[in-house]
Length: 136
Image (cartoon, rainbow, N blue to C red; front, side, top):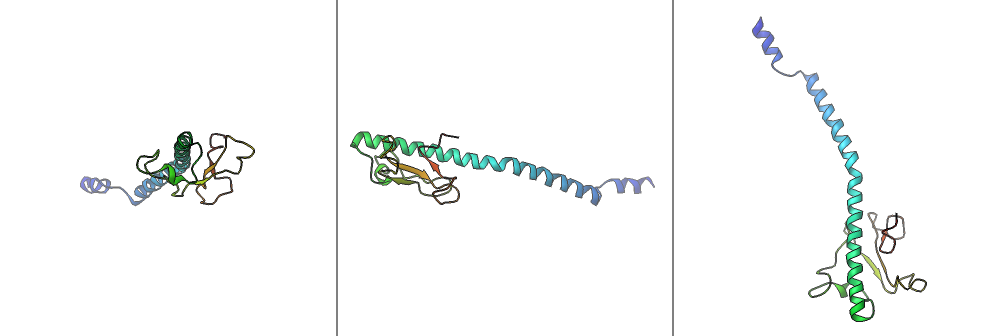
């Protein structure tokens, strides 16, 4: 009799296994929900950093040449401020326009430089503009 009881108690029941699977599923859901927003924050932070690097390269070009470049290819390549033109974290090209739309009213903002953001379209709230990226 004792051997039969030992054999039965040696493994897990289906109910116990299902309970473990449900608990693991719930924990995985909590982790995904908590870290999902971190990915978006990291992408935005990377975009702001890249915009700052491009802005610095544009300033360097302006100091050396007396004007801003007509396009971003003038600051990228061998021997230039940037090794190659970066893309934003969503694989979009950065948008650069010289002279910028606000250049007439604000001479400090001689050009427009922005990322269209995750939706890949400009003109909406997810755009990241070099002149407003530090504002909350």
